[in-house]
Length: 463
Image (cartoon, rainbow, N blue to C red; front, side):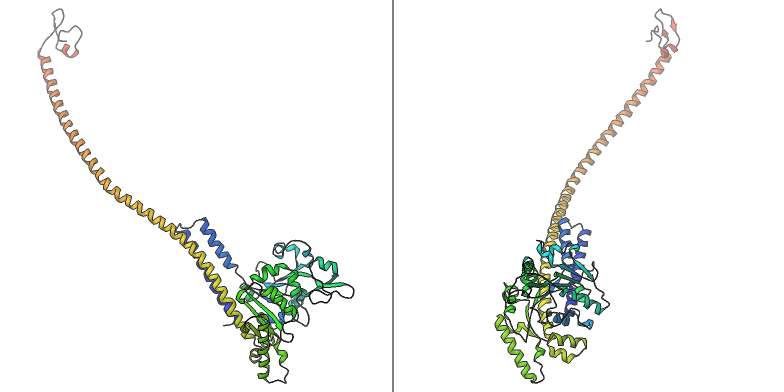
């Protein structure tokens, strides 16, 4: 599987992981299992996966074919060189190739004068006004090539100005910039370049870091402290016609191999092996010479020989443009691409998977604790209901018995009331009979009419 295919598979896996986290977040919300902390953590995981990038850094001194190698590996499908590549220095400042959909295809160039301040490149990335933007016409290869050449712009400054901007000056030119006859020093116009380009691999999160050599790395501490150490893969490019020079060895020891046990993700590319194809040597002799140089490079850099890849970037690019399979195999570029894919993507896949699994398990453990707490609460409530069910039965029976007793008492009282009312009615009737048959006598002894009993006047003796 090619690098592009493996990268596509990795991107698809990462997208599926993001979808799974989103479904988990929705499920937790629908079941009232989420809280602010869990939501923030899941959102952070999704954001981290969405913005996940794989950085491949290309490190070399000038004229090692670094830009040509980038063209051959990543941009051969365009049928031309995207990054400028020619004899001499073409990349004068650290360059990042990436894609940000929120910005138009463009080149953002940070003027070299910003070195006089204290702001780092990461800080200056938040201030677009500090950068010079050149828009890219992605429909025109010639236009893009012309625009990308601006990365190699240089300017002449005095020696004192160059030193003030952080450049090392060496009259011999071996360990720094060499002044010309007028005492001026040629330095890059730009401190850093950001190329925003809608390439399929860049759209999926690949970031290519192109560094221009020892002098530029030494003058930009952020490369040493941040960008290079955080790169997921570093390709250190040498030239077969020069071998490991003094400056090459300094770059390797100071910036590539420093503090890296086992050199995982660090590869050495011995470029320009096509210089051995002089037409006078047999293929076996060429292979023997390449093997000898690979062993020599491995011994000098103190690494295993399988970490050194002899290639011809120029022939690899030409073979891809012209679809020449035989030339592509002879360039040995597929072996480097396979090793890069096998080294970079599986290791990155494992790291992302481990980090996501750890965070997801913490979220699930927190949700499990909440579920267990709810289950315990429901169990306690159920037990209370069971206990209350027995108590309520006794209370109901007591209330029913009490109501029955009160009803019986009410019925007996009602019967007594009816009996008393019957007696009262009988006595009242008897009284009416007696009052009707007995004459009423006044105080003076005169008889009164029967009605006096009913009227009961004050003077009636019946009262």
